[in-house]
Image (cartoon, rainbow, N blue to C red; front, side, top):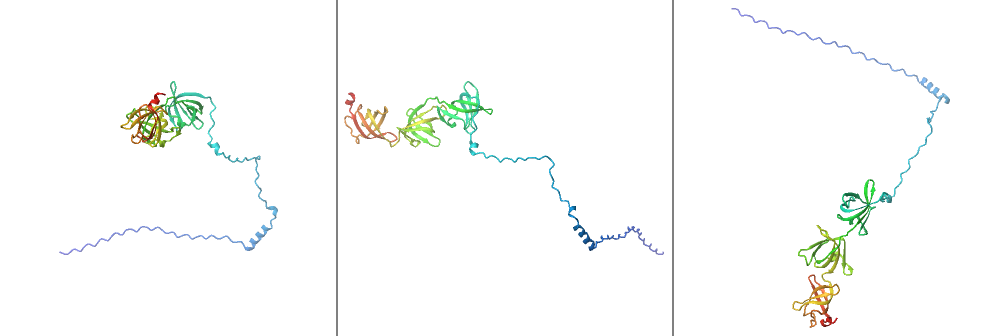
Length: 336
């Protein structure tokens, strides 16, 4: 069997070539012709002609004249300088009618200068005050700080720009003064708290010393520095229910280390314990004085009813006699 010849390999089909776009020839650049330059002779002729041009042909520029009617300008006046006194001066007082109001101070604002009154007969009223206002307490002119909550006041009021202005405020403190005597237990100068031990009270009695408190030491003025522990004082104050009473006056009766002279009649005598009581004629008060029978001369004339003169020092607890002298015997006392 004859071998078959292999079939010839198939030739790949040739793809038609894509048509290439025709390339157009680049256009030739057009060369612009430059303007022909004028000859130098022509330029010189033109310049010469311009120079020979008569001056009459040259028209000067005319100034622009206003077309409207003439006007006058007024310059602003310089600002007037206001003196400092005028800026600080209070405004003038209102010129309206004055109305008298009476009531009790319900609230007072010392910073915003406002006050609210509980008017007598009912109703409340708010008002303001300033540096034009005048304040009086018991007829003496003072400042707004003297007006306290609860004070009874009479106000001369006026209407000022729709608000009630207090032209004058009169405080009437018709509450009677009370008094108390005792020994100083403590005093705090920061808050003015004064604690006294009274003979009739088992507990300390508290008061408040203010900047308006007066001090008296006999016929001489005193000070808050005399409020030492164990000092004997007499205070005058205004009762204030619900709070500590403000002290109006402090009378310094005895300060530790002070010497006193007592002159009067012996009302009590204890030779064993060395104690005698004298009714002092200067203030008609009884004083208990401690003495030492061995140091002071004691005679038979030292009896109850005799008149004596005793110089004693207040120790803070009692009076210690330094000298004792009988000025009148008991028999002579009975003949008076």
